Image 1 (cartoon, one colour):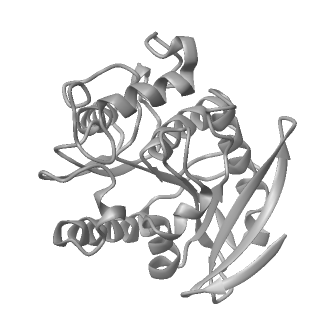
Image 2 (cartoon, one colour; image 1 turned 90 degrees about the horizontal axis):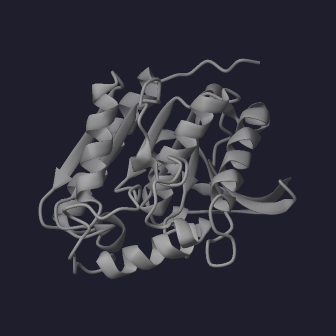
Length: 279
């Protein structure tokens, strides 16, 4: 375990053990000691097969700490090249249970545990929200699956997509690595959340997505399915941009608008979304 502070964030790295595996966690906290703060498990992207927990510093997770006083826990889940589904899912679920069990020492309100992430991290956000609902061991107050990777089948926007950063070719490769022989099958919704048929009682949700990227259609469908089940859900749509534009071009005017809107939604969530834990 070691810790350091930089740019308004105090960082600590620890490891937990679950399911016979050591799982590293990056904990980001405000410089001022938090108390009763929202706790957010933020899951990094990378198509389930690349990426690292330190991506929390360059995405929206850092906003939550600096702008809203949240405590962010970013799990270093095992990547799919050597650990296909369901390893990443259960690594993240173990991190979620750790947050619940250690909420007080982390300075977190146990009734305001949230989950978010970009891309594959958004896919894991949706899957974790479903798993937590079904297992009943921990309540998730709010989910933020940003431009999530949730459909292992082609959609109108993910087929024949040649956009930069993420496209059809990379998407097919990533699903094949994550799901192996089941990449084009009707898998569990924990593996590909778009396979879900019951969206009731899932946490309120917010996301944003752009029109040119592969995950445009599956993101809109996810939000619409949540709404149809009576769940509060909202998506902001940005024209013509590409996958993860807010991380790649944070100073672009459209990215600035997306970042501003994200922070406004989280400020609302911080005041309104709670889920009482069963102790």
